[in-house]
Length: 379
Image (cartoon, rainbow, N blue to C red; front, side, top):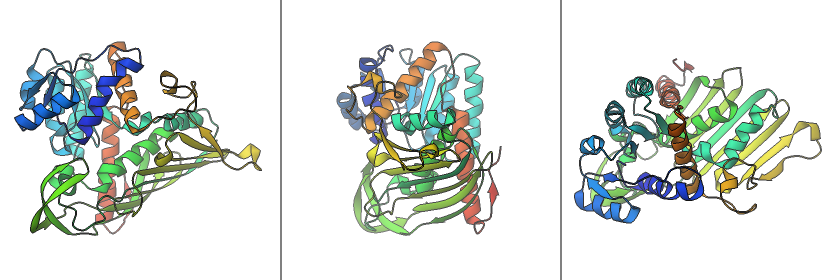
């Protein structure tokens, strides 16, 4: 694994846990890579990795490594993934796939070439593995919502409302690619497309940076940063993004991604309306899916507690009624990845899926820069 902060911690938890829950081979957590030898060694000891490298290039040269898990900022995804795939390593890469469409295209081309040699790759959109979201996809696929007409999705956080929060890497375009748009907007784009089984074809957008300068950061880990005193630097990404769009088949959609929704901690919300019914989900109540059947018009929405053994992923865990949490989505992700490798099939979401999301992100940025002009998502 390359990187050991927020995503590195949750991915490590998944690698440690997956074989204890699902019928897959137990992964050997061979080596962790990070730039600081001391900090990487501390993380490896805490997270369960057997060895340490301070250069990811040495990591992918090792004979005891068959899978490379990329948990770094987006500016290094392309270089690491392409090199690992060329070396014959299976790759799982955190989202968004890259910082630019060009990088994502290069990664996708490398993944296709590697797949011809039996080398697999996947982009880590973990919210697909929330049981309630997977069940929502099942409902749509079964036709229980009829013709899809509306999709509205939000991802609301408030972790940088304080203008004194420091200028961490997620607020710098050269490292993160974009702000709320790429970091959390990518999730709702993928989640919406996953549930309805169709892609966005065009968007019209607004973006805004509310706090233009922040104190320089002395350090950061996950969503926490330490300020470095009085000197400030420029925030070069968006704080919030709003856009409307159209799906293949004609459904209309609205999306909102912000880190300035005061009081909202991790509210990934999606509602889908169809001719025969609707469904609604909020990650802050992640074990619940709300479903409306238009044939029962006097009943209104009903709560489905997604903890039954026949619900996606749930049967491997606890008795009915015992809910799951954020970390379980990564266990499910790793389980699906390992099963695809064993079966010799391409896992999903693929790098090509990640590229499609990247193209939507680029269209949103282009539209916002052009005064909200309607912008097609390139194929």
